[in-house]
Length: 457
Image (spheres, helix red, strand yellow):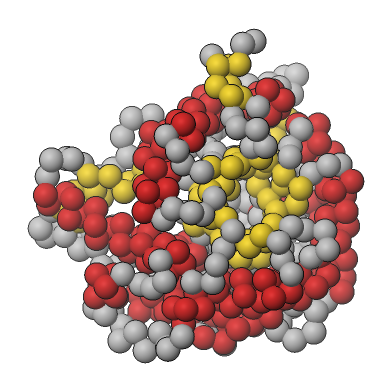
């Protein structure tokens, strides 16, 4: 098949997962409870009472899973370290058996020619730290930096790329404002405190990693591609400014531009006195980074409408903004499929925050996959989704955006947070009863994309 769109030489192709979603072994080898262990056991919080206790049992099956990665030709594998597996109480002595698992995993990856990319925090805060205030507490940022240093001490000789946080927007707003994610609180003031302490934790951890000798340090955000319902409407443009400020610039500017935007601080003051922002914090947050991870799934369309309630509990401060319902083709999550939104988002980041290489650290879709009698999973909708979004990435690169890699979400079906196991994002099918793995047609398609370093015409 003729290659129509070639990606740059050295473009990194990979896949991503997260510890709580795939590892299982929730009580094995000294692991302590996380906020997601607690949350998933709270009646009514997770679909059908599902938990991550077993998940994909990756903790015990990782050699086979790495073998599947090698079969697909992955260059890189992005995984997260479970903080409560390393430090069951969130601070203090490191659990050697927890580190042993990641030692084995990293060695297995390197032995198969796959570059490990670490995420230090993918939402599984040790429950003991939440009991002390969680991300609303300044101490958590300091403990996070200590945890990052402990992980690097053991694994830094083999891992070159370290990222601190995954999607702090979700940790803060879904965890502390809307309560649909762990720890399940509903307090906008707490959410803004969590935003700041997550960012401070990132900055302190980045500094600690750099001091220890880390080669590349970054962070992964899930910036919203916020678009106006009517590009000619001044009211809709103002709605975009408000939502973009509270969703994107509240993270981008402290990390990449040296401080919070003044208009965002004004919005935050409606809910809190900002006493948690102390002298020197913004300088710490702006610690230099070597890469920015971008997670993208769907665009957000907004309009300015006086009296509109805004985006609900997850979007405090957006009163007067109408969030349009998703339109057109949707994924199983009800998310609008619009690859052009990814191009626009990447161009915006490249224009407004130049100089930092970008990686697509998550992109993918949930569909109602069903295995046929022969075990084949013909997930044509997923292939179309991935193909469209890879073309969108290629367009951004052609327009001068420095995008250096793409990591599909997800390597395998897994525990999808509040949705439990009913939503499948994987390019590898998992039978949760038998733990059998079956590459879907999308996995075979992705294997060929990697081998060609491009897409067919």
